[in-house]
Image (cartoon, rainbow, N blue to C red; front, side, top):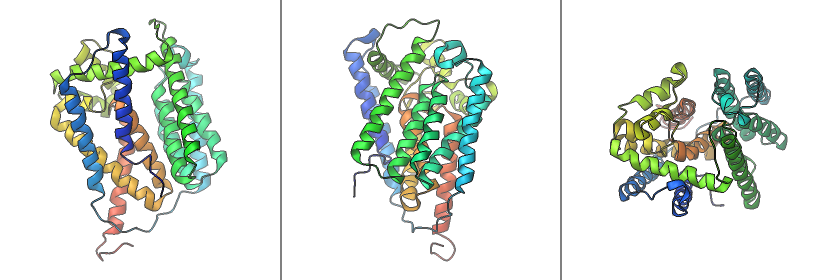
Length: 360
């Protein structure tokens, strides 16, 4: 049996890599970054431990393998993927330019059409690749990733490609060398999109090269988290409220993080642990990390047993959680995907524990 590099514990590996990048940028003295306090390290270790505990506890609940519900029709999934691509192309057309090359257009790129296209395209392409693992379906994956990259947001293109790689890992069983090449290509794309987007913001002047910019972003996020610990509970639930209703109010929850921690409204990332601490303190972080670990643990077991669309769902939430290591859980769309995962878990547990006591 091969080592499973995309188990739920890959989130912890991503966290360790991110901390190495952050501390490296600090030691290089990039733009005044400073080392985190001992309290920050303690909170990070605690959060990671609770996540691991949640993932471990999910494996202690015994289930039998339920009957698979089957996969959606291939033509339906292709139609949904195509619809998502068309909607994103329409979004770019209505913006009248390429947001990747303009800070002003980027600020207007996340529209309701963008949200709809993302909600349709991301799960559909992963379910398609998982249920019908054919090479030709990598083409719409690349087309969709390219269109979302043109909106100027690094996170979305990384999630699309990373979730696709995770799905391919489980459905097509590529070799370790092939996975290494895919992840290397993903890293290059992520750095390039992030660098181009930053350099294209008309009102900012950056002199850092792409690698320095990557290290700075990591170090800056860690520094924000360090400062955030002195203001636990300062937002009193505002982050959660605007995460769930932000598209109605056009409010970016990360701007609230910037306002609370830095004193001015600026979209600011604060690690996966930051938002719950800023909203409700340490207990909220503990609850969040335990639930994330448990849900990912359950979905990992389910997709290993049933494959198909469950692999697609798992890939989507795992990729987003890895990205949350930097950005924090302040995205409504990701919580919607987590709701789908919870429904999937309830379905499997119900099928494994009917009144007869056996799996149907």
